[in-house]
Each structure stands twice: as structure tokens, then as C-alpha cells.
Amino acid sequence: MSPHKQWKIFLSDLAYDDEEEAAVLEVVRSRWLTMGPRTEAFEQAVADLVGAEHAVLVSSCTAGLYLMLAALDIGPGDEVLVPSLTFVATANVIVHRGATPIFCDIVSPELPLMDPKEVARNLSPATKAIMTVDYAGYPCDYDALAPLIADFEVAYHRRLYLLEDAAHGIGGAVDDKRSLGNCGDAGAYSFFSNKNVAIGEGGMVVTNQASIAERVRLLRHHGVTRSTWERHTGATFGYDVVDAGWNLRPGEIQAALGLAQVKKLEVNQWKRHTLVRRYQNRLAEVRPAVVPFAHLTSWYFPACHLFPILLPDATLRDKVREALQVRGIQTSHHYPPIHLFDYYRKRDLGVPASLPKTEEYAERELTLPLHPNMTSEDVDWIVEEIKQALTT
Image (cartoon, rainbow, N blue to C red; front, side):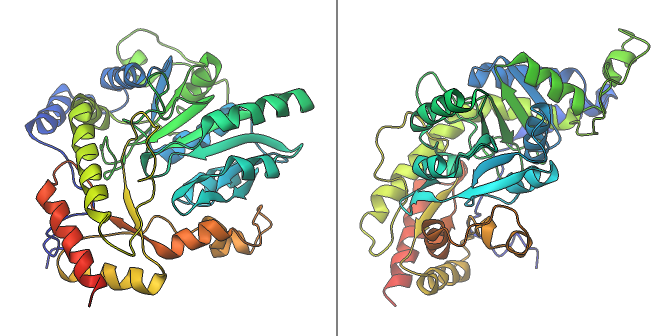
């Protein structure tokens, strides 16, 4: 059986049509596949979308996170504060830079975002950056972080960088002036196949600081001062190498897909919002299920990337998950806490003895399907199946 045939409702799905197919065909016919004019166009489209001065397309969000740290020379002896409730890439890039991730707890299971009070408690003379995570497409309390950063900089007479893992964040905003991903010194988006803008693999760094953007551009291409496209078009002949960079470049097919996806983002975001409201209204009737973020009314426009729910414990969570699977409804789990993984437990990598709120959330969390191809009837059916599982 094909792995796709068992699912009647996918956890996520591509909002693709003839436009993406035509975009790929155009690239193939152009006979230029590596970083070039479509890359530049996609970068400009995202910069315009989120109100950033600079956007740099890279091979993945993980690459973007790493390059942000590299651009700021964050390395051995430095600490970076991060939530443990995130995909492991958030912490891995810090380790690869030789720095130490310091894990912070969430506010609560109902608000599963890095707690500013935990950030304040974990700040130290070694802290070089705070890396937030826009979990599920919702922003942490950036207004509460601002005075912490200001006080730190006065006390230690140096910069404390605010970096944003906005893998879930594109299409969302804190208010009418700040897009998710563009709330700090730099942010990185993911364009993985399940994201709100999906191109298969790819990421993008956005920033309002030219020095960060210039270094990220340089480091993604081996530290070479001229791109292959510039040399191909005859704009330049020679080049220099001014830093020891990496090959973290994107391709033109991914950029072309991204351009097609960005055009659809506004419509697809409203579809996601409509589905989230439907879920919230229907699940309000279902006890003992709890919907994180449902109590919030002040945020301008969350990205609504994931739809998590909480059950009272892991046993009941798994019962619901198995019942939905039998009915062809795909679910997932976001995320096992990083501080509990073997690699981090067995090494001196900033791992706390316990993060009780994060651990409770992870024990209870189940991610339900959410994507623009779904209908309100799909949501109703999923909720009815959850109710059935909880009453049998």
C-alpha cells in the first residue's frame, strides 16, 4: 500500500496547482538551475512581505539559523537561550558553533512559548543571544523581552542579540508593524514541504541589518565574493575568497516554487485562520481536550502553522491518536523536548534537571491536521472522531 493511501485527511498537504508546475518547467527550460535571478526575486518578495530590509535564501532553515550565529561570531564560550519545546535543529546549530544552548521552560501548557521570566532567570555574563521560537506560528512575548535585553546591555556594556527561529512563522505577525521572523536582529524561515510556504527544502534569513545580511550571503557561498550567476552573465570574471564559508546555496527550482507560493500565501493564511476558528469553536464542547492559544485575543495575525491540542495524559493522548489513525486521520507530535534526548542528557550542554511545564506539555500534546486543502466539514469530522474516542 502506498503510504499516502491510508490517510483520508493528511496532517499537512501541498497547496499546489498548475502555477507551481509551470514555474518549475520555466526553470528547466531556462537551463539555469543554481542560484540566480529567481533566487533574487524570491528574496525580494519575502523581504517585501515581512517588511525586512534584507532577505537571503539558503538551503534550509537549519542553514539559516547556523548562518545567523556565524554572522554574529557566536561560538565557544557563548551561551544562547532557547526553548526546549522545538525541533532539535534549533539547539543543534548552537552546538555546531561551539556555543552552549541554555534551555528555558514555557509559560504554561496552554501557552507553550518560551517564558520571559525563564529568560531573565537564565541570563548570565556568557549569554550572547536569545533565540526565540514562533511555535505553531505564534509569537512569544517580544514586548516582555525588550526590557530584559535593554537592562542586560546596560549591565554588561555589550550587545545581546535577539534571534528568531521562525520556521513556523511566515505569514504571521505580532502586530501591524512586526511580522514573525522580523522581530529581532535576524530571523530564519523554513520552506520545508509541510510549511505555510512549501518548496521541498529551503530557508531564508531576514534582517534589517546590512552587516548580518552581507555576511550570511558571503558564508552561504564558500566565502566567495562573486556568485556563479554573476560570472555566468559576464558581470564579472574573477573573484576572491574572504572568509571560510560553506555551500548552503539554494536552487532556482526552489526559488521558483517559492515565488508561486508567496502569491497564494494571503489566501491560504485566511483558510488556515478559518479552520483554526472552526477547530476552537467545536473543541470548546469537548472535554477534557484543551486547545493551546485559544484564550488569546490580542495577537494580530498568527501564522497558524500547527494545530496542537492537549489531552489529560499520554495514555489518553495515544488512545485518541490511535483512534484517528484507524479512521484515516493523520496526526503528529510537536515536539519531544530537546533536553530529554540522549545526546543532550549525556553531555554538558546546558541541560537542566527538569523543565516541568515543557515536559507536561510534551506528554499531553497531539497535533491535528491543518492545511489550506481542508474544509470545515473535515474539521467537524475530526472533532467528532475525537469525541467518540474520548467516550469509548
